[in-house]
Image: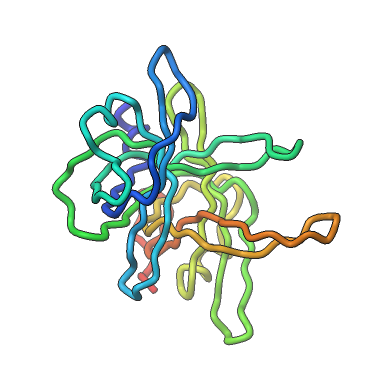
Length: 210
């Protein structure tokens, strides 16, 4: 169990941007959803969804506009939206009120490549690779985490095969994009992914940071 806990570790400090709203109940315990805003060094901000138990809410954390420091796991689940199943991502909070530096946004994962990586270059010749990582969780569950690698890490990711076990670290980023549906209606969407800064085969020396 401890090994599975260490496969997926997140640390965040930021500002709670909305009041928590009820989500669901598990074994009689209620869980709530909110979002934490974390500023990057560039000044841009990532707004990251989090799921927190009523027990932690009772400790007084997660008031709108208040600062919060949390640790937990980045988890995925499927949700039916407009008749279609969508992969949703959230930080499942395990602890709060930690002594972390301001604007911490750090994640470490160990998992398996579950789709062939997609490597490409931008018009400005930046190298990018998209990788989907399956991370094992307790009770025979897995979380499916989209990751994006750049530069040397992208070239390393391009060579990965489905089933390869990898370790990575980076930050959770939110990214807005516009999508047009089958009726031609355009809407603003938000994607969540790991921006990778270190990547290697599990147990081996990491690729050079880009």
